[in-house]
Length: 343
Image 1 (cartoon, rainbow, N blue to C red):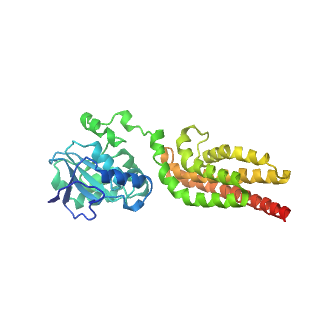
Image 2: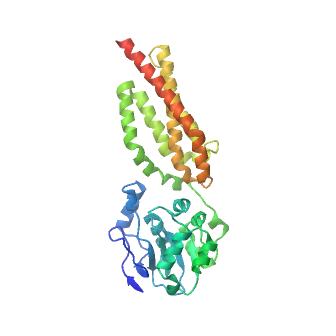
Image 3: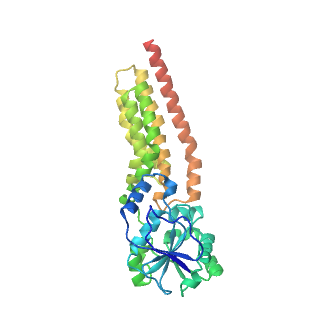
């Protein structure tokens, strides 16, 4: 069994790991690690935030030391190693294509076959004397524990939802009901906002600029607010918006934030038909934008599933498109009529 010493950071994260090789790491984050986390949160070079799959030694483990299993997404890997800093153990990293545990479990990359492959490639049965793998609870949807046991001899044991509870879990030998509870606090949901804002920033600015040039500041600001509501405000208010579907929640939020702008258009100095047309265009076109962006946060709750999201999209995407298209058409008609009046 060969070993490689040294901590893992973005500047020297391993990219190739031979079978039965163990890399030694620490549970202390460097400045480079923290900078990597910031870039990951803001979606910078998304595919770069990963470590090589394989077996890692934390501290000074013995054959009796625990084996933790995680994804090769840097935020998942680093959350685990910092949480168990001071514990002598092993971390078995699966190749999840740089995706976090829960999402990878849904996609199938944090799954039975990958666990079996990594256990065998690391010759784990020769490294430890016990036969327990501690998996994060959120990885359960992708894992058939009985198949892992049959094919490797290792028993799957589910640890707590959050890595920060692992020290207490290890002391108690089991997870308490509170450790099993999945919580998405406002802080957790707020962490999702930066990457969404990055994704929508350019099209949002372009759309607002076009609207400003063609229709003035009210339409431009209304578009900005609708997008920001869907990409930034929605996850913060998620538990308190009525209804259960994300799309309908998004429609409600979009209508609330757009309503003042539509009312402002009604009070403008254009003709009555133009004012009604302007208000109707905003009321029809912008709430669907907020609702569509809200669908990006289906992973911010435990009450969604792949089939549920697919069903919701099949139900709402077409109405979103029709409403947006109708609002855009009304806007084009009122714009043309205004131009004709000027001419």
